[in-house]
Image (tube, rainbow, N blue to C red; front, side):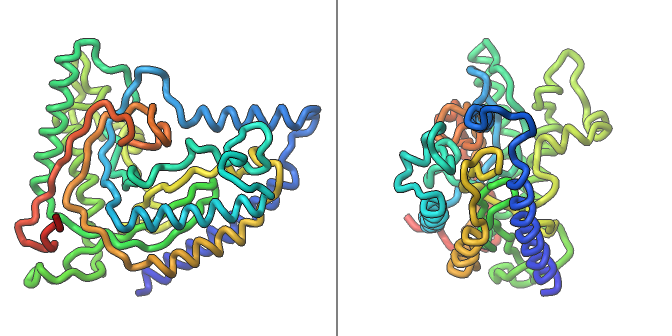
Length: 343
C-alpha cells in the first residue's frame, strides 16, 4: 500500500509539472528571429510526422502482448473522449479537420493513433530496424529460429494477469494506459490470484528479461550476426545495446511491475500547435476514465513475435498492421492459474 501511494504521488507530481512546463514553453515557443511562424510550425509538424515512418524496405522484430476485448474497446472509447475534448478546446468539429497538417489549430494526425484492433503492450524490441536478408529462404529461416528461441524462453514462464492501473497523458503528449502485474503470493495456493506485494521479480519483468536473454544467447541480434559472433560477455560490456532493445525504466517513476500501452502519440507540444491547450481538462478526463477502468484485468496467455514494417496504421509504433511475418508464442499454464479461454 505504501508503494502504491508513493507511485500515485509521483504520477500526480509529474502531471502537475508537465502542465506548468507546457505553459512556460508556450510563452516562448517561437524562436527569436522567426519571420514566418506558419512555415516554422509546418516544418515542425512535418518532422513529427516523419517520426512515424521508416526507410522503405526496412523491418524490425517486436515482441508484443495484444490487448484483448473488452478492454481494447473501452480504451478506444477513452481515447475518443480525450480527442473530442481536444476538438472542442481547439474549436474543431471533426477528425478530418484535426488531421489537416496545414490549417488545424491542434494537429491530431491519424497516424498518431493505434487502431483498437492493434492495441498492445510491448515486451521488448530485440532486433532494431534493418534491411531484410536478400535471400528470402535464409530470411524465413532466421525468423523461424527467432520463433524457436522465443518458444524456448516461454517454456519457463507461467501465464499471468495484467491489471489496468490508470489512463494518463505523458509530458510528451503520449496518451497511455498503465498496467500493473498480478501474480501469486502464496505458492501453496497457485489458483489464488492477488495483487503483488512482494519484492521478487514480477512476471512481466521476468518474461521480458528472459526473452531478451535467450535472443542474445542464441546470437540472433543484428550486431551478433557477423563473421565473428558477439558472445554474452561482450554484450554485457555494452549496456547501451540492452537499453536500446527493451524498456529499462518504467512509466511514471515506478520500478515495480508497471508497464504501458500507447493509445496515441498526440502532437500537443507548443512547437506543434497554433492554440494553447488547457491540459488540466485533458488530465481530468484521464482521471475520470481511470476511475471507470482501474482494476480491470486481462489474461496474458502468450505473446506475438512480428516482423514489423511501419507501413500500416500507426506507422512504426504499430507492430501488427502490415507485419511481414508473425508468430504466436504460448505461455505455459501448468498450474491452471487462469480460467480456460472462452471460445
